[in-house]
Length: 262
Image (cartoon, rainbow, N blue to C red):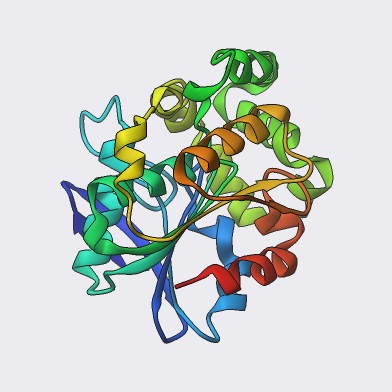
């Protein structure tokens, strides 16, 4: 399994296809396998990069690493693209991955040709910023009570993606994801949600950006997408399915994003 040392940590990555480069950034549990099907579909025209974010799955948790930030995660992504010689790349981010991709656009514009931001967890712009966490908290607490962080991951994804989607995932991927519970709940969740680039910063983005939200996603994602799109001067494009269309509607998602890719 290929691993590269970047930004003070070791990152597991996977490459598919040939052509212009494209990076996928996953959300909660940070596993490259979130995008296996989508990456396979796009490998006919792109060099597709997927990776396990730091401290998740096959990217080991750095010694003493107890906190993170959107900036640290974006620095990891920028260093990965640069080290692999694949910058500038088109970038797709889902959920937490979408705000990491947004920060990549802002702070590392030289490594990004353009970005597609799906269901961004830009909850700092909500009229009630605590609503999303309030909705998720009882789900996570029930999982913790049932079996600690691994069970809490399962409860969280059944809530976010649906029972059928969770049950249909590759068993190895599910195992890696549930093993990432300590990173998700102990390091990431509650940290990324405060990310809030100001209007002037967003206005300075020159690369093309598309804002996507799923038809079945909770209202908080629709509100966040509308705010982000308005500030970027973009439109909101709807994708079918749940918060994770890369799993429940991969072909339709690829059909939507392929024409956007610069």
